[in-house]
Image (tube, rainbow, N blue to C red; front, side):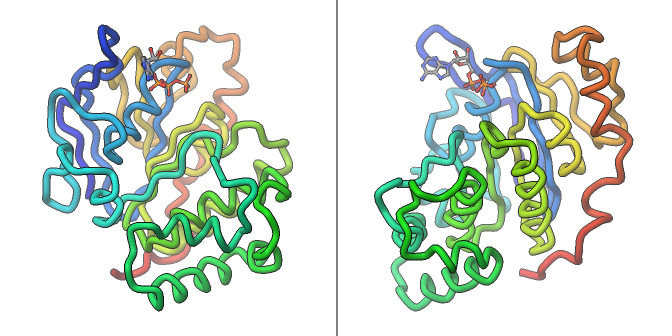
Length: 259
Ligand code: ATP
């Protein structure tokens, strides 16, 4: 569904991505893992058109998208949940969802998809007239996902959804994302919380200084390899191993939605 071929991104003299190639298949959940500054956020931004790829190709559903504007990329079915959730705090839940649908022109379609989001996240329906800034961190995370889903995307890019959330809320968020997966959606997820990412994903891509150093099923990753690639030695080995050796999430969820 989505392929990056030798993608390079620069910020002035900084080479943030250098020859990044990766593939995300339909209905697959892929987790992008790497140390701070490895280029994870930049990879998502390059896909959604927020930064320009200086080299390489990004192909989505058989077409090159690396020269398209962000709103056109969203129209084609790639929705991006940015780092830090970025809900509009003084707008209501309803208004935040409406803002997410800014590229859509048919009000009836938007209303239908908003009700679909509310059906998936009933807590958002209960709070639909409440300013988003008054929601809990977990509810804001749900709203950020809902704001992406309202576009009925084919793939959702999510940047560090668990950042800043309490451990119990992270568990709730995991359930939310597993629910998203049961809709048959495809996901490319960036996570610093490796345990969280590996519990959710079928495959992992490890980024190191702007280059992919591992790409494959999460079940083939071992803690030594992870620790080495992430440059954390064996210090965090227990933590790293927590999500390893699990069943891929695909086997735990429902059937993909046919599109
Ligand atoms: P983190 O986990 O800390 O968010 P990351 O893996 O997402 O890191 P990026 O944010 O993609 O990494 O950054 C990759 C590199 O590009 C880093 O060296 C960063 O300092 C640099 N960089 C990112 N954004 C900019 C920018 N707007 N201007 C200049 N350099 C940038």
